[in-house]
Image 1 (cartoon, rainbow, N blue to C red):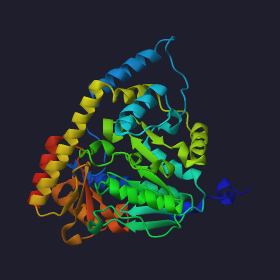
Image 2: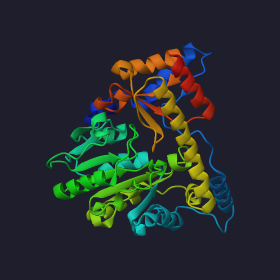
Image 3: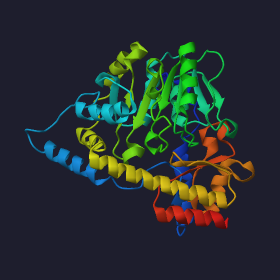
Image 4: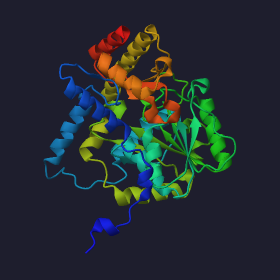
Amino acid sequence: MLSCAAVTRINENYQKLKAGYLFPEIGRRVREYAKANPDAKVIRLGIGDVTEPLVPSIVRAMHEAVDEMARRDSFKGYGPEQGYDFLIDAIREHDYASRGVSLDRDEIFVSDGSKCDVGNVQEIFANDAKILVTDPVYPVYVDSNLMAGREIAYLEATAANGFVPAPPSGGGIDVAYLCSPNNPTGAVATKAQLAQWIAWARATGAVIIFDAAYEAYIRDPDLPRSIYEIDGAREVAIEVRSFSKRAGFTGVRCAFMVVPKALGPLNAMWSRRHTTKFNGASYIVQRGAAAVYSPDGLVETRAQIDFYLENARILREGLAKSGFTIFGGVHAPYLWLETPGRQPSWDFFDQLLSKAHLVGTPGAGFGPSGEGYFRLSAYNSRANVEEAVARIAKL
């Protein structure tokens, strides 16, 4: 009898993917180096994972939620797949109404992470939809669509256009992914630049997936933190946000996506998909997320973000003194730097690891336009960031 593997048809689109996802490959190389060099103190500024503990307001709220789960009269089982009203209402008030944006409850969908959302949202579009991404690009936008067999077009984001390219001329695109503040370049789109994209989407019938996972790092009040601050965006844009970098939830997992009803059937389609394939984020986690919006929570999480932004400043100024050309690191936790002589970014990765025991992210892992660049993360202790600058200065 034939084995299952001999007769089962597979999704051959997976064969189009690179052998390994970028960050596990970085982890593999670092583990091999650490094993061969056990005395090396490796400082990791590669993966954008937070390092500071949860702030007191969040911890207190989660402890209280655990206590609720321990009592019969307050125990919670399955919650609403879209999220509890107490969290959705806090999001509506603090993230949107405060910026002049009005959203209904049923336009917000709480999830367990924005990576999941940007990877899953492609399911509500046609298999032959044409996708546009700016390059360099967060790999999930590309890989999730390659898995579905879609054609992907790349729009170069370069130093010449401030890493925020203008929309393409003409149509032919069904879905465009934008990220601001951008991962990996740290660039932030202005209202005028987003208005161009909205006008293009309205003219061509395209939908914009706007990833605003790092919006809390924007300190200039004139820069938009939501695409819905620009007129017409509700008719063309889906917005993704996360508590991971805003409140240290990388290991806690909570995010949300906004799908306006003005997008026609997409709101109902995403609701159907979300309620079919997802049972809702944990009640305990959502209580912690809601605490972010409490008076103390807003102060504490802002201070934590300020800490990471100060790390970014130290890296930015220190690297500039060492002769590097630096981008980003102002309204974002990421610095995007040119490799010396624009050498291949994986070569620079190996050089930095072996000579300075530092880990960053090769720009080539973010797409063709990322070659010759390198991403550093401001997520680490102050002592490690200062030590990293000192090591680089000695190279």
